[in-house]
Image (cartoon, each protein chain N blue to C red):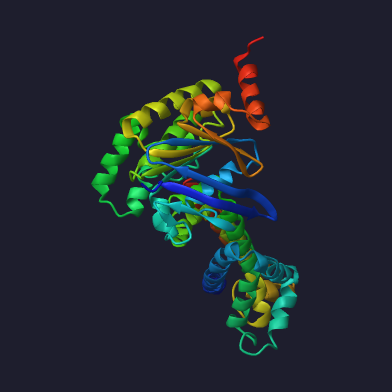
Length: 205
Length: 248
């Protein structure tokens, strides 16, 4: 491995991580509160989950492409890539937030209300702690997927490890492809392991 | 004296079905009123109207003279202990945290909560040194139910509600807990409303039995009167006694 390649790998890995972390932070910031709201408003559930589902079914390369002509959200570069990654990451977090909270034992929820907990206390002291593992499992799935999908960001000028992969594909250079694919896979494995560990550490419900 | 809890011509419609129809009933301070009935007779619905988990669709339920609609629901519920089948303990709280929940919500100082929780655990026969730090999943069904009772008593509420509290226990444990219930009642003399479908349990714990049938009050009687009461539904329940005792 040449020093230039090594340096570029470090740079692109960092760029990749920035994409993933930013996208996940936004996705969680949107999907977690949305999921909580949806546990309170059953009629909206179908529509919101439907939207998130559709986002997941759009082939990722196409989604990146679709975003380019859209004003504000789209264009070429990192922020478009992040928008696309967020759209992908929403569903698992949203779905697991819903599943986790709605899965809290009826008797437990009822006794919390009967003890005189306010809506906020019910959420913070009972529902979220008991749903935490399930929600984190959703975050884990979303993170691992995002790490992989983020390699496509390079196609629209978003940078990251995908730069190696697309360059390698164009020049039929296996070394370049591996220089992108191997670190991406390693990051995914690490994230999966780390979040899986955190999931186990959370007190079981 | 105004009754502690008073049902006045209360009806309740749930999911298009009239679960309660014109129930009128007073619960006096210090008594244990048992709501007895089959599944679907409306007894649990009536119970849940006392702490405003359900509100009447007609009539009113008064607690300490004030309609449950007029009460601030949170304040009302913190004055009423609630014990349900399978206890409904918080699985992520220790036994001590479960018992101390309402005092904590009420803002008691930590030391006082701890002392209260330990005293109650002692009272329900679970030595705190051994049980306070455990989680509900580390307890037997009977022990969980005891914790449930301790939790309901924690903030010293004037009214206690029991919704088939011993229904899911094995017969031996159930009898133990029924005895403990009677002993506790002698000690603390609180007003209790107790839902069950088990006529023997009703006769054992009640000072008065309200038999509900199809959302209506069929009979209201002391246990002694209940044994002599007339009516199809009473007879149906009294017939259970014979078979359960196993007289051939």
